[in-house]
Image 1: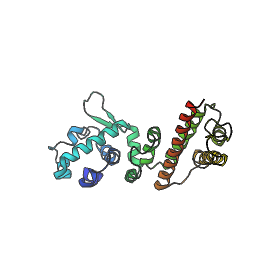
Image 2: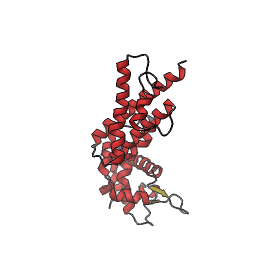
Image 3: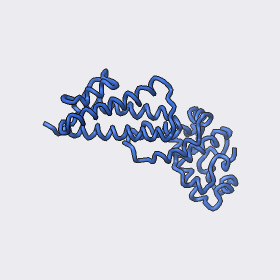
Image 4: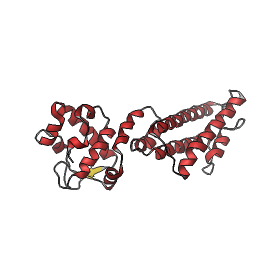
Length: 243
């Protein structure tokens, strides 16, 4: 495999985020022989090697920076790792080879449906990588698992409180720690239904059976989980200052 076969045209490549470009770079690196000089960032992007120069053309400097960022992302994700005793050299890890063989590079295009920085930071760290890899069920499961964890901690409930029962206890109309007693009873009831329904529909099924989700549906659900987390944080902060 040549670099030009692994990556999109340079004009497109320089617009991609590190994870999007890194996912495309991974199969190229995995296809190299273990002793290839190209398993070194400096060698891969130097002007003296014809393949990179021919591919990048007039966008050489921009492509060097883009590939360096993608390389850093691959390192941080454990898809490549430093090669012991060979400074600057890397090798594709077992995880990297598995992903290169079975992953869907097109899933990284969908990463633009979910820009960085729009989700709760912990939610993003738990779910975004799975979403980018096209593992939509796993991303949704992680998102609503986090909602469950945050509700439990904010309400000070024990670990054996789970699922819809946890939500109805935390948001109990009259004595729930996370219930907003300043709003009408019907709205408090709706909040309890909202959280219990979300956990019942989106946390429990993916944990017990395969669920078919599109990228767009997954983005919608991640934003729903994000909004629920905002509600939890606002209720937790209010409960902390109330007498």
